[in-house]
Amino acid sequence: MFRSLASARGQLRGMSVWTVGSANTLKVLRLVAPPERREWAAVDWAAVERQVGLRLPADYKELVGVYGAGCFGEYLHLYQPCAAWRELDLVHQVEQGLSSLRFLRDAGALVPYRVEDPADLVPFGRAENGDECYWRRTGVEPDEWTVVVGDARGDRWTEFDGGLAEFVLGVLAASSSIAFNPY
Image (cartoon, rainbow, N blue to C red; front, side, top):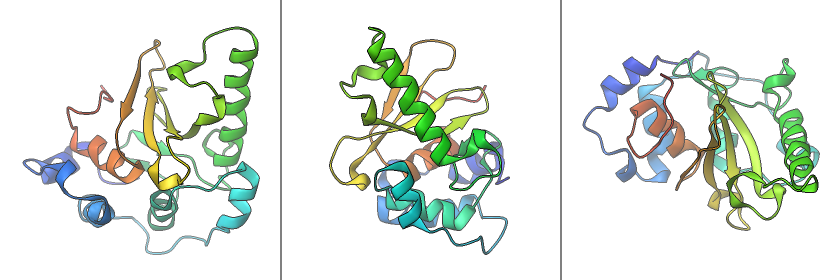
């Protein structure tokens, strides 16, 4: 568990999250939401990427390396490689998410969030309220992907024009740019 939303929001008040710059986003995150442990088990990223069938964004790998298993702001869970619980296991969730999206497409239903290929949405986490978080594969390079959140209680999808680290910082800062609220 990392710092509470209230604690992080207090520290971020008045800071323009979007002017921090992606190179410094992880540094800011470490200041406002320090990891509980200094070391986590090393992840064989090449093996994980083979299992999911794609390269993963660098900020995701760094977040997992720095924070390990846990929850940001008592609200946002990131799927982890080799998680003990399948519901939070990255490989399982990518396989299940892609299978579900392909089922919808093959059944003639609209695939959520206006993607032609279900593989363009890659699940990376979920919120306590059931909202699903995805990378939207907007470019060839994983570090170009944006974040999309699917509302668990409806068909509303919200895109965040930034990477995972900026998204996590935005959630902790309760940015009005992100329609993603734990309450």
